[in-house]
Image (tube, rainbow, N blue to C red):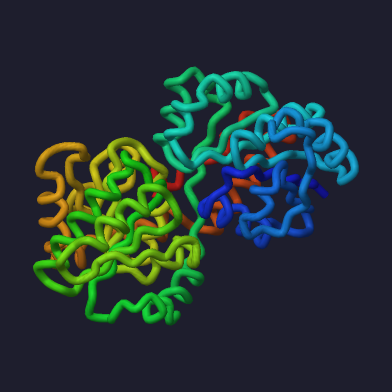
Length: 370
């Protein structure tokens, strides 16, 4: 039996938690034993049942001795890191054990390309990319192509259906005849969340039946809340903070509206496609990888620029197109984001790493083969 040690750090967010939870519940128990450990308290406080390792200082490399002792005690065969700090710590303390890093956000590549390049020149580390754009950005920054493999997020469609049948929408105070819009993290000045809210507020001012959720807690979310509170028109904004998981909010929404200035993680778009939620987004490469304008969603040229709010408003008002395109997107999601395939491909990567084969051996991008 193979023992997999899942290593988490403070950077773990909703998409990593969902993927990790799927592996914990769905990997064949007769072939894999799984343990979860965090290298810092913040990582241990993200809604997962984990063991906490203590390091002398909050630096991932200083967790290496603790990781070495833990992996020896548990008989770990492979380390699965759910963040770059966890990958650095696992590589330093893994005692030549294979390390798999799960990477969702292409912006992290530009921010940490030197560390990623140094790690991946070791044959015992692989990067599982949630999209082709993540792999492309890695290769552009000098990461060897043979160390990267694309595995699309696995989506539990039964869980989405349970969310859709839940009373979450009523709990949020959104009538069934209102249009509920959600935007996706990260919430920064370059996320386009402010432009998205401005457009939603304008449509609500005109029609009076639009609400928008800006999830999470951030400086940008607070700025939007201050602006929203000062508007003379009907309230648009619903601030949920961290009270509800993003996948649940997406499932009960009508539109996912995301307007990033540049590449972002596309996991939220994947969930919107699967949940029969219309996707309206800026046409940055990471979005255009999944969404084609007037094929399975509506795109607009990214901000910052004059007229972007008007473009978003026009797409929000095009309800006929939204209804047709989201049906196409849902059909594509069934093929590209199969949970069964996700588990099979993750298992294949584990087997490849343990057998010293290339990580992508026998793994085909589901979005290409669909």
